[in-house]
Image (tube, rainbow, N blue to C red):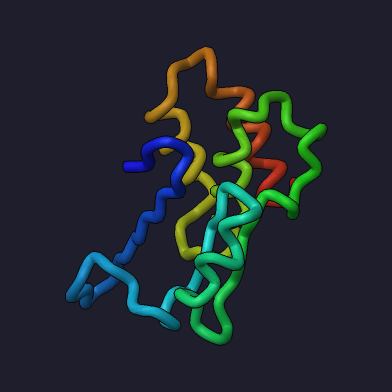
Length: 114
């Protein structure tokens, strides 16, 4: 957990054979950075064909809420993963309070390029 303005990193691994929760350097398929200054700091985790998803890929004024940037980043990530768009949308609906669903679905669609 970050304290006093420090950064936070999280590894997510899934597949048929996952032997460690940590992604070794140079083996990550995706790097999702919520803060632009974290791209260079964490770029070493990417494999040579890895994909970086970062806030600069979106025009902030297109988001109805700056707080939904993380969901826009998920939308961009979703274009590269084998989960259906419907599964992502269902997860957003399931995990967020009803009053936040629509603004976050708009952010997700922005990230997907709709």
